[in-house]
Length: 88
Image (cartoon, rainbow, N blue to C red; front, side):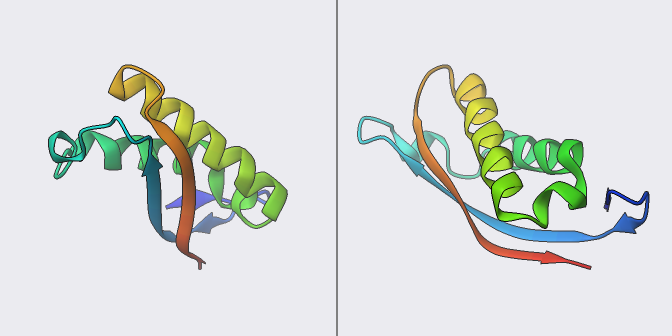
């Protein structure tokens, strides 16, 4: 659940794809709940209002990548994509 720009409670449902750099060992990341928590936290921090405009989504994706890199201990994330984004 997120607030939009008018303080209206919105439900955000999204699928996110994260493209990693070649040298990253994907097997150690599979099933790591902390990745999902980072995506949830960044989405909630920005709110539904930020996700409605394409320019703002780019900012949110950059923040996700930066926070994921901090979690992973270095520059492992090449890019972040919303494969599904629904705001109710």
